[in-house]
Image 1 (tube, rainbow, N blue to C red):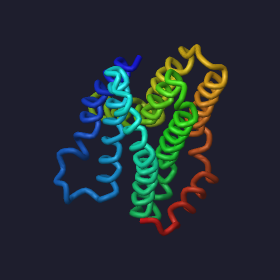
Image 2: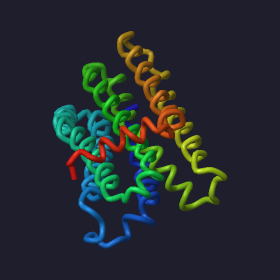
Image 3: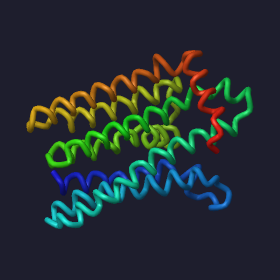
Length: 231
């Protein structure tokens, strides 16, 4: 599984580049805010980590794998914080009219950050069970499916009839990938329960986009977050 994991994550890198090419990668460095650069940089380092760690195991370089694991103790919180800072910066940059119309969209970075933190936390919890640990670490990439696939659909295929359909597609793909990782595990019972728990939480987070995000209560929660002096 380790070799396959590295190949799969590495294969996603060109798709990430395609997804972020039109609006980010070709722009001059100074024309993009620092929070976007921070998020992109830390996210790229996390993808490199997801490629390098299973590759190290496949090469039986266990000392390197453990060293990269210690790097993740810094990189994972940095990625979560960078995600929140970018979301806050974009919210704080909105005028009141734009916020009223688009503030609810910031459920998506909340979903992504929560899904990432949950998967990484379980990955640490089961770090001594390699098969479960590896699955949880791969699940940290699941939140990437929505922003990458959503952009690929928006930029490279004819538009869908409704904006909400993009998440129907992206969340379905994310759920299928997560399901394959979760339900293929046949190891320790505690790890199986944790994987299923993660899967259920992921699905509930995704359903929240359709049930919670459109509500006035969610917009008020986003308004509160926007008012915190973070960026």
